[in-house]
Length: 281
Image (cartoon, rainbow, N blue to C red; front, side, top):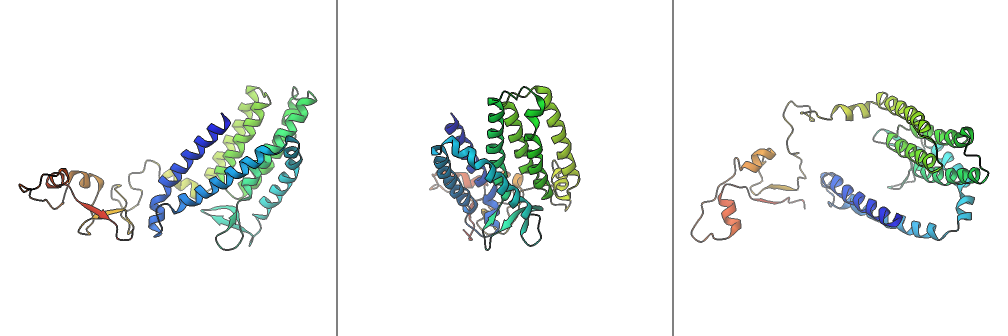
């Protein structure tokens, strides 16, 4: 069940990456599957590491928990040092390794919290200490908040949400009561609102939701008009808005002849535009 769920999530993620990045790749004059290929390669690499980790004994996982935690904290602290940390889209959460290679230490923080938290709770379960709140929360929650604080310094709200979800999963597995979840969720929600309010980049994203004029030029939203559009009219002119394209407005009409029996010609003769692939492709 775990393998099936993991494959399903990975497959859906790859589909969404391709759908969301195809136009961006064309805008930079790249092949449409450029970002998809990078993500697919990462998925293959992760699958190989998953297989190796599944063959490792539990004792080795527990032995690696603390070294990975210390290493993740060290790397996440390096991100905040000028000249070492690298910002992408307003988030200071990368370390440049030279050229196109970059490292995101917060990803190691996720793995560290999972291994360290699981080992910590398992040891306390063996000692029958999880019936007490202080043993369930300390030092798990302070350690998780330390990782969250380092991530928040870089302004990475998405990774912060994932890390908080990992913390909730650990507490739920340990049998934490519902009122404890409510308290932790309230604190996490307040921190999330604070992160949104203090970031102009995030506020701009929320303000554009439902906006009728995302471009800011006063014109209604329509199909993007970029130089790297996937489809153009055969004569090279701008096909206009999506509604006009669907209604066949300003399209050259073809006069049907007695020899035009094919469905394609009959469809074109009803006033639809014919499009050809962009010359850049």
